[in-house]
Each structure stands twice: as C-alpha cells, then as structure tokens.
Image 1: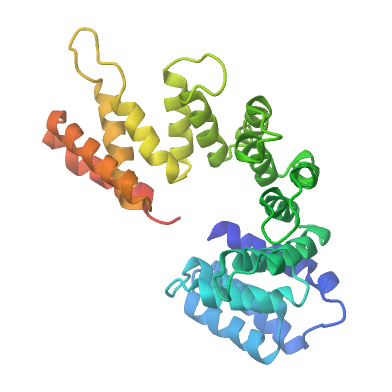
Image 2: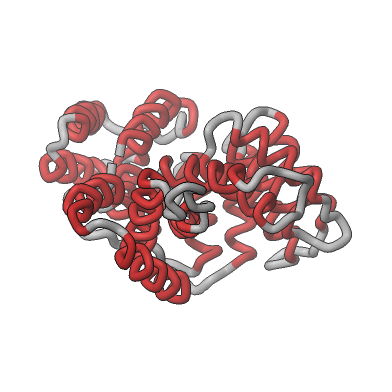
Length: 321
C-alpha cells in the first residue's frame, strides 16, 4: 500500500498542471484532503466514501484514480480489476499520466473491455509523452511483437532505451528482456546481462531473478554454483514470487556437508521456507506440483520440531505488506 499511497500524493501535487482547465470545486478539494488523511491512517471505509463522493459528484481525477487503486489493491474490499480499470480510464481521460499507463495495461490485457492493442498503444503513447517513462517500454513491447502496431524491434529498443538511460529501473529490466527474449535479430545476452545488472544495483527483485536464470542456464560466463542461488534468494527476499521456487530448489540442491553427508541446517531450512512460499503464492500449476514434490523430500529429512517455527516464517513472508 505504501508505494500506491505516495503515488496518490505525487499525483495530487501535479494534478493542477495536468488538468488545468478542469479544476474541481473547492469543496471536493477539501474532501480529497480528508480522504488522503484517512487512507494514510488505514481507515479504508471512510477514505473510500469520500473519494467516491469526489469522483462521482465532482468528477475529480485524483479521486477516480484513488478508487481504481482501492479495487486494484484490495484496500478494504475485494480486488476487482474490471472496476479498477473503469476508474483508471476515467482518470486517464482527464490527463493523469499514471492512469493513462494503467489504462493501456487494461486494454492490452482485455480486463474491462475486449483486448485492444491499438487502444493500448494509444494510451501508452499519451502517458509517455506526459512523462510516464515506463510507458515507452510498454509501447516498445507492442512494437517488438507487432501487436496492434507495425512491428519495429529497433524502434522498440530506441523508445525504451530513452527511459532506461534516464534511470527508470522498470525500463532497464525491459531492455534486459528485449535483448534476451525479443526479436531474434537483436538478441544479445551480454547486453541483456548489463541492463539487468544495472537494475539489480538498484535492488530490483525481478532483475536479480533474471540474472539468476541467466547464470543457471549458462547463458553468460563462468560462475560459482552459489551465485544463482544467492541471486534467487535476493529476489525472493524482496517478494518476487517467481523466485521462490528457484530459491527453494537451489537451496535443496546444495552440496551436503562433507563430514555428515547431510544438507547444512540453514540450507535445509531455507529450502523449506522458499518451497513452501512457492506452493502458497505461485500461479503456475506445474511449478506448484514440482514444489510439492520437493517439499515432501525436504520433510523426509528435516526434523519435525522445525516445522512450527518455519511455517510461521513462511506465513509472515507471504502476507501482504
């Protein structure tokens, strides 16, 4: 919630410039300020009611964006991405760059309307021109694949590189993925590694994951057996769900102690923690099945007295922030 709340405050700060010709009445401005204070204190119900009043009666774009966040993140109510996208689009139409970007994602995924990559490209372009750097890369992804726009992999790279060079971590990760998985004419594992490394230096969990996968699959240079495991653990510790299974699998595959021929206790405990987290959080059915099989192998060699403490650690880690 913290990141989204500060995003709302930032939007509130720039909103007068974004919608200079559509200023909300002063009473709705006061309602918004009250709602922000209630949201900060965790009073979701009262905050929602006030945002809703300003969104419906005052057509206030910040309130509309806030309501989208409530439904997107499940603040005090069930997650409903269709409703979230509807509110994002209303705020986007009033020139809120972050809402324009989110609306592009909604159209790309076909969340609240049938999938429409042409409309998605239009929203990404509007958001990018308004200063939302990450939108350049999402537009680039459509260009990379030719989805809804004429395929142009080199233009895709050019657009995304602009944002990456300005320090956007998301853009740096996109550059890594473009060079690793993009059009065959421009794939370059070394360039991919360089961009992932730049994002990892800013503690981006997805970057740690991709670096781990590149090392594990032998895509780049020599490395120790411990390096992929360390990278997966860094990503997992930052709650990047795809890293849970990889971290658990690698800890369980650690070489046993030469004297006891058993896995060191700390490695075994970490293997159980991350494999259990993968079972609870992964959306990949094949990965869950593989994780369950590894968990049974871990349980066969792990003291039962550890279970209660480790299960508590798993529960604390996977709960929402």
